[in-house]
Structures are given as structure tokens and as C-alpha cells.
Length: 179
Image (cartoon, rainbow, N blue to C red; front, side):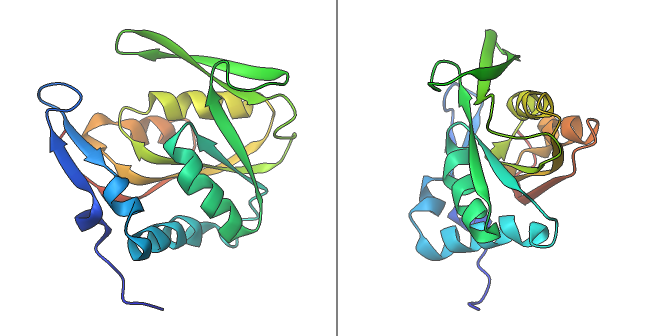
């Protein structure tokens, strides 16, 4: 096993993107570094090897990158949680609030079965609105959410706390306090 990397050092911070005052945490630098990418997948999967996960649900779009790799590491299937209008079959959907309006997430109606154990994966949790919508959407199938894992947590924005209040255990690899 290689020496652990400081994953935080592989995240590029871009000030004032997408608007003034925001510090954007860019994962493309982590994705382009094979050892950092491999370690992030191992670290996301590690807490769940003995958790009897049946399926990993990745949130559109960067959750697809990490979620499919975590599903492979755990030897389970993958379910995409998509933005509205991207899935061709019968869907369940869940609306959620944005800063200026609403958006919708969808899954195929047959993607997750009752009592399946589901792990939710995304690249980042900030305010938690999208992750909360994904959990609500998945729970409509009567599955069990075993946890939600993220590469990055922005703890001052409260997203992990928001999921914890829904009885969803939350893990993240990196925290960036502040905004």
C-alpha cells in the first residue's frame, strides 16, 4: 500500500468563481492525479466494506465519477441520481430549492428495491440541498440509506448536519472550513 497522500493538497481553490466571494473547490486536479484519485476511491469505500451495501447511488454529475468507482470497489451496482429529463424510463422525482428557484432529481422507478441498502456518493457537500433531495428521492423506494460520503465537506454551510438530522451517517475525506 502506498504512503497516504494529503488529498487536500490535490484540490485547487479558485477564488470568486462562479461569483465574487466564493472559493470554488476544483476536483479536476485530484482527478488528474492517478494516486490521489485511487486513494480517494479507496478512502470513500473503506468504511463500507462490511456494511452490506447493495448499491451505490451517485449524484449528478461528479458523483457519477466517484460513485461508479466506489461501487466497483465494493462489488455492487451503481444507480445514477440524475437531473430532470435525462432518464428514458419511468422515474421517481424530487424537487429541491436552489438559491434562485427549484430543480429536480430523478431515478428510474426500478433502480432501487425495497429494503436495499444504499450508499450515497458525491464529490462535495455544501448546504446539503441536493444531497437531501437525493436521500428523500431514494427513500421513496423504501430502501435503507446506510450513509452518504463526500470527497469534500464545507462544514460551515451545514450540509452534513442537515443529512445527520435525517438520520443519515455522513463521512467526508476533506473539510474546508470557511465558505
